[in-house]
Length: 350
Image (cartoon, rainbow, N blue to C red; front, side):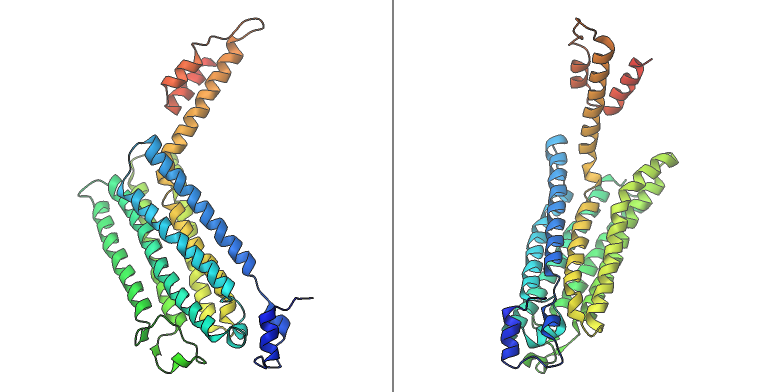
């Protein structure tokens, strides 16, 4: 049997809940699953960022504006995740009837304000992450090429899209307010507002277009490389996280449409918040993958050298005889290049 929370019982005792709505229905929730999903996304994206910083600061001993922008994106993302968890705890993702008949009016107003603040931060986090990606592409692109100018054009396009999203959020009501008033709220008649779903559908569609732009640029870069088809295929694997981000953005757009134009739209709100977090985390991860190359090179180099050491000791060592300590150990210390280690290890087998 479903346990009925105290706030629902109190609202029922006060006669606020219509008789045709069951208390069990109002008690339904999937808050816990959404919160766990958000926490996992934050942790994974934070770990990837730490690995990126390690690769750039410790291994390469140099950083760029792209690294700074990605750190800024993460600093904005953390309060977004916190706000999402607070909104879920406050009941924003429950059935619409719960919000209308159980939640106190002051709580409803607070959720609307927090939702407004959350999506202002959302636009900024994605902007910083995307600009980080553009800064990386700009660094590796050759000056005065079509790709170089395409990156500049993409920068202008992203800024224009960001400003459009920002103005839609700020001026969604006249006079300006940070509320999204329902028809049964007092503020509804004192403001002329665009619907929540319309504003967020446009914002989601713009974000989806931006994702296409961001992950089209590396596709063009890889296509233009004068390397073998096998190498291009290997490099194309770097685009896989970007494909996932596009899929996530599409899912968010779908959930926003469901949230606005279904009878129980608020029930999709938790899922939408989780997908928004996945979009930000996915963008952070996808645009950090190329920057992790030094880390993987270092890892594979160490593994290759370990293979050399093991082979030397197995092939040259014998019972009662120690392997030459001046062989593989010193060689691997002085040879960080993985391909060189593998080449020499292969030569030892002949």
